[in-house]
Amino acid sequence: MIYVKIRENQTINEGGLNMSTEMISIVAIASIVIWSAVSRELVKSSKENGKGKNGRKIITLMAAGTLSTLLLTISLFQNIHF
Image 1 (cartoon, helix red, strand yellow):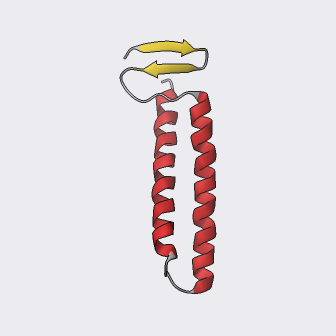
Image 2 (cartoon, rainbow, N blue to C red):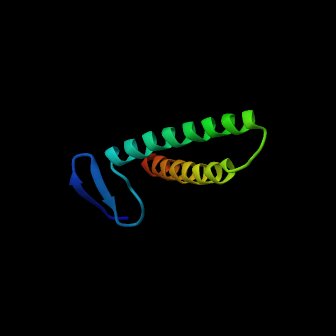
């Protein structure tokens, strides 16, 4: 794999995904916000005793949360040096 240094804390891995520290931080904060929203919606729907219109919102939030978590996991494993 070829690494090209752009800035001190940012590299491009031409063989795959390698995010900068700032991007990882933004995705991590967004992931926390998304999973908090999922939690709030689940509590709200359990109080209402029904899925109703919140079902689509919960599925959308869970899909976004899963995607952000997957990005963070891939980035973590790429940064581990064996």
